[in-house]
Image (tube, rainbow, N blue to C red; front, top):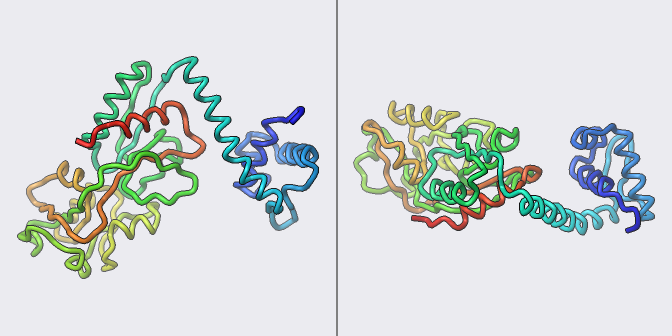
Length: 290
């Protein structure tokens, strides 16, 4: 451990993700040659190769894979320890930017109120994010964290508290045959055009929220979807809180049995975890559901 440089470890961790010296340098704000120097110093310190590099590809050696598996949790815990110490020294302050899809439900608002009371020096900004881009604002830094509809299967994102599991509803025009029904089943929707999100929402996410497979319009925003529903161009699945919030005279919201519940979750970027994000996640976990 004598003389161990934390920068060497950081360089190795980023290179293990990117498997590209140029992109690793860009993320670390150093030159490609500096990446090579840091890696060489770490390999010399260990006494074996961790990375194999050819003109066509970069990959970890067997030892490199094992070293990565053991290093990552230790490094993350070290970073968390430092951040906890910084938080204890200065408190949680600054601005926490939160995104939400559809509607900011009651539990989220209770969590925000509790967080503000606990950390009065940290302002909270709340912004709506596009229905069809649940993860974009987190990735581009537009928000520090977002409350989104699950599922989430993004390797660069962390899924925090999961909450608000509710039966799904389908939005239909008042002229639609389903409008007079007290409830529907999943089988009822098999032949129903369900309005879906456009890209950049991932395909797995879009399929969960429009599972019928019948061709239907695609929309970027929730309001676009509800407008098409009102025009009887298709139906649209919505979570319970969003349906209740967006009630309108020309659209009926009918409960659906036999589909997985809609669930919300808090997500943030793996490289963007801060004391503010962790403390808000704690407040959200502790907030009462009703």
